[in-house]
Image 1 (tube, rainbow, N blue to C red):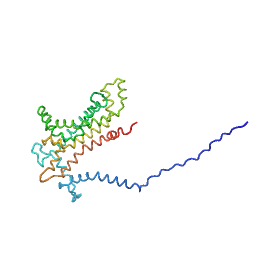
Image 2 (cartoon, rainbow, N blue to C red):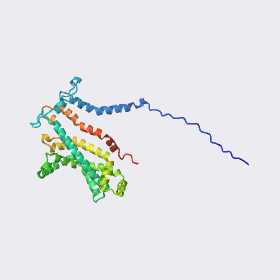
Image 3 (tube, one colour):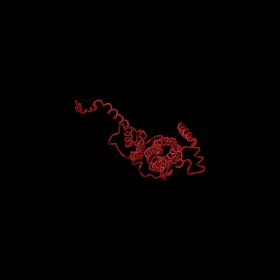
Image 4 (spheres, helix red, strand yellow):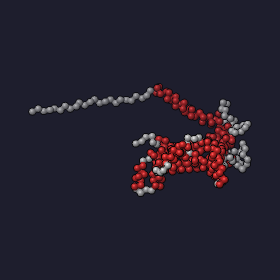
Length: 312
């Protein structure tokens, strides 16, 4: 009788942990150089505007500017009390009134743009109706034409509207908001529709089975999921409206109705002199709402910009 001896496998020698070599810092010098150049390139205009705003001479030349010349006279001039009932002169610019006008018009128009764009994008994404593709193609076709081609037509249309509804014609905030609503509908609709298409339709079907209505699906399921993209669209719309100059200068002619972009031009439109220091100070303070909005919506902006990049 033979016995088979099963050979036991010899234990393999333990593997040595391979240490990952850290990249030699000397080989990464060009990355640090590129990063430093990018930071300097981004901060140079801001530093230049800050120096011009703090220059009491009121010029853009900073060659002879020293620390001893640093002052806040330009900011005090803008924030000083002015008689708004008097005739507008160089010493009587209603800067705070222009600031309020810009915030009010930009906020109302941005909220309404997001509201209308969200409703139209949801309809194109979830509802199948006749003319759906034709309507999307029409929106895309309209975006191909430059906006400046419609200025004359818009001016004539607003005059006709003002003859019937005086509160919504030329020279009114309601008329300017009405124009803003039609100018960005195509872009916002396409942007939001692409995001709504990434939301699974199974969520809608499951909510319908549970007895949810169409309004409940939209407000309690779709909108919470689309909050990051809505924040991005809201921010982009607000920045574009705050920086708008052409449309606001055409349709708002009175000094007490001007927005900030139009009003700031008054400081540098003089024939014989231009107060560039006051203009730079006003531009810096005009950027504060955008910076604050960026900080408040920072988390949503990152989520919205990266939405759809990784699927699974």
